[in-house]
Length: 79
Length: 137
Image (cartoon, rainbow over all chains, first blue to last red; front, side, top):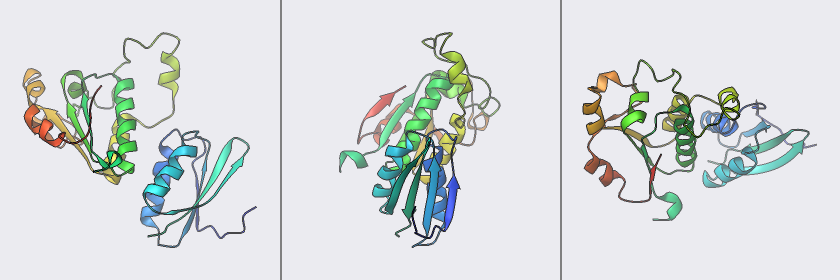
């Protein structure tokens, strides 16, 4: 288990690609620099799309963890 | 300019929901990754962007088999018009109606959904599309 403090969790399980990524982008745009967001996604596309977008947008992918049927993506808003 | 930063220019010709959805997903992907997207609406795609019927059923492409069609219709993703709105919200997406197709269907800008930014000729589209690839759907 992660001990990092999560400021906001986005439960996007069941959403189709690119829904979870779009929800993350929306949350990060509204958040403050330094805040940590967690996205729960069962969409296979998220496994590649969320890391690709986080790198491109120059935020920080803190952790990716796989659970039964879904993944946790923990992202820190870096700018 | 790096290939990954060049604009993506798409000519939308087909007006079926599956092709429009595929184009909208590509638009979202390009927009979130920082690429400008130029969309040019022709023929049946333009007709699908009429304000009065944008969210109505536009059927599927002829290649959708009776076995595939129910899975496509049952998929829970957002409507293509909503995906395009999201793409415009997060990135730089310009949607232009082809002046020739507007004329063919006797349409004015007011007949189209507000998601369409304007009407232009093919030469103007080609100017916007000068860098990067042009995709025809």
